Length: 378
Ligand code: GMT
Image: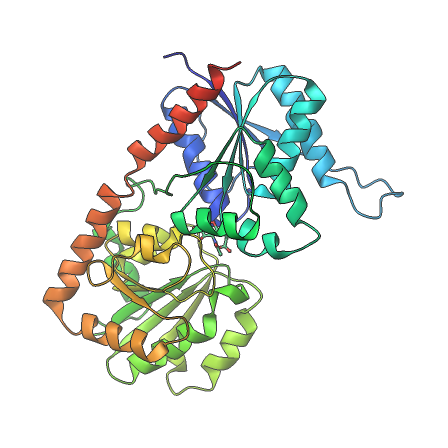
């Protein structure tokens, strides 16, 4: 098969959609394809230099007559340049707004019959899709893309409910790089450095601390657990809810058992010292962090929301609870964390789930096949 030239646009800063897009680009580059990231900055998870990965920066002119800098137009214009200059075979955009619309505009601008793949990631539908100032644009971007994928069946169904596009949507699950996300024996030292005792269980939550991540329930669940067993909570990330959570923690006698670690790069080391992951979100199309934790041997407790039940197999690699049911979450957690045999079984199952249902290579094959399908039509 000939190697393809693939353009990728995503949000390059912290966030699951940017992480997935970057990991996909890296894996495709390892397969010999030429990858062109068209983004506002270098994707943060790119980490190393690849000879066949290129970065095209979208620069936005802040001319004084503009009330708002025209990022969308600059992106579409840059996409059109890269399509022509690099003779791209396909353009894969992650997140519907504005990326899908920009890709369609770019295709029109340059007059090339380039194939557009749009991957829906979650809040582009569940939050922005509900916004009447954007919903028509989202529908347009989806319908004008050649192929549309969603990261879970739940997101696919939600897209039909909220946006009702006249378009087939394929589910392609997220994956993680299993060579990076693995149980790291060498991380045990880190536990000592954080002052975590041998008899303490480690619970972790990692997110962008937005309201939909429901941080108060994470902390409340931890307090209920901590009432019963020795444990520490690692809170990884930063965002709008950070201050509120710190205030909530401050009022508890267990305040010193919560470690606010802020944004961290090598989260695989933190997952490797953890026993349980909590993701009690109000909305969550997939929960890539759950998969990252599972790949490091960490079972999860998640809410019965969006795509979480497609990742957590209840009673096998974790537990599902109803949104807001912190008592049930704490009960499952204590039950698991005080039964060493069960915990070992769940940890093993978590890794196995990643290696079967969410294995990277077959998922990359699925994307690659889509690209070849489109490239053949050019
Ligand atoms: O979760 C976030 O706030 C970030 C967001 C994003 O757009 O980067 O994540 C979404 O995409 C991830 C990758 O596909 C999914 O794993 C997350 O579940 C999804 N977030 C939501 O649906 C809230």
